[in-house]
Amino acid sequence: MSKVFRPYAPEQSELLPPSPRDWLPAGHLAYFILDTVAELNLRPLLARYERELRGYPPHHPRMMVGLLLYAYCVGVASSRRIEKKTYEDVAFRVIAAGQHPDHTCVSEFRRQHLDVLAGLFVQVLALCQKAGLVKLGHVALDGTKLKANASKHKAMSYERMQQREKELAEKVAALLKAAEEADAAEDRLYGKLRRGDELPKELQRAETRLAKIREAKAELEAEARAAHEAQEAQKKKDSDDEPPSGPTPLPEHRVPTEKDGKPTPKAQRNFTDPESRIQKTKDGFIQGFNAQAAVDEAHQIIVAQALTNQPPDVEHLLPLLEQVVENCGEVPGAVTADSGYFSEQNVVRAASMGVDAYIATGRLKHGVQPPPVRGRRPRDLSLKQWMARRLRTKKGRQVYARRKVAAEPPFGQIKQGRGFRQLLLRGLEKARGEWALICLTHNLRKLHGAMGAT
Image 1 (cartoon, helix red, strand yellow):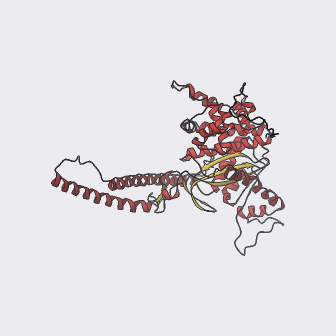
Image 2 (cartoon, rainbow, N blue to C red):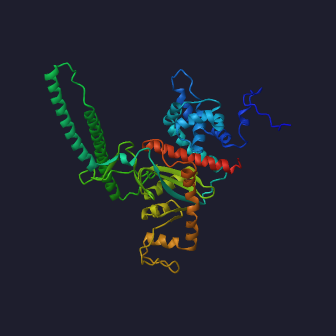
Image 3 (cartoon, rainbow, N blue to C red):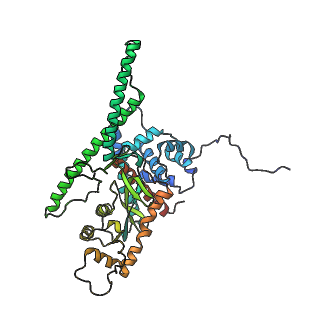
């Protein structure tokens, strides 16, 4: 007697097509994304389509938003991979409702509406607050360096640009002279039958490289002039007695300049993504951006985020704190940050906002004794010494010890878990939009997990 197996007929059609809600387990992330997108206010996005004059109906914006949010939730950013997933992945098929937007459509939707997608960060954060996931008892600040969609080997210093410009100009002149001499010799030998506008390939390549270097050099010089003018304006502003007003702007890398406003010899510009900068990491140097996040300890929800091309962290503290208050509507109970964020100005401004800040001051030099914690506080303590003393108290040690468990896991989940070590989009504004998209999908995953979903 032969073994009896369960029926298996892959070619058999079903009499009644199953509902998409039956394709995945109840509580699946794909269903959660569909339900969440239905709650989001997408009126600004839908209003853009009202102004469109195209005759062929586009894909529904809610479907496209859901597709991108789910894709980023599971670490898929490539538009070609997203298109492929709509054919091969059940969850993507559920989100897209059986439609298959091609990669150009996905890429263009993200490019055209990145500002709206980034703006959903606050709406998703509000959903997290409503679910009780944001406590604001302790918020930790941290940053990580993300690779840009550009190679550090495609950057060139101002000094090297000047050298290469001279070398290529001489090479182009020599090649032109050689080409003219060859043309004259051929005319004498064969007659004037050639058009005379054919350029040797070597000359074409040299002229193309020369044009690119001259363009990059001119842009670097323009950036240097703007940076020099901004520095002079800041000096004048700092000399005024009026306190700063308005929100603190995010820092932006400025081209280092000489006294006359020209770029320094070491000033660099990347040919692929000119707004990205060289960033130092524990593994060396990368061409990239500085991604920042303020994380609420309770459930590791990102309550503020930013991305700049300025490598040091110190100038990011105040903009992040202000964003936390704006996004959440209240001041956090305690804020921790590592020594990269310390400055006396940051301590003063944080205190003026009512923020109870614990900012590391860095390691003591060899042989230097730490200030005593007990006893009356000396009157001549600097703010740095005062903060160092504060961190060595029992409460200070307890609060600061929680920084790592709050701030570092989200970066690990983003970079290692979902694979976002490199940004896909080029340019500072687009990179900021993509980082906001990465952060809001981090919060969506946390919200999904907290709701007891599978």
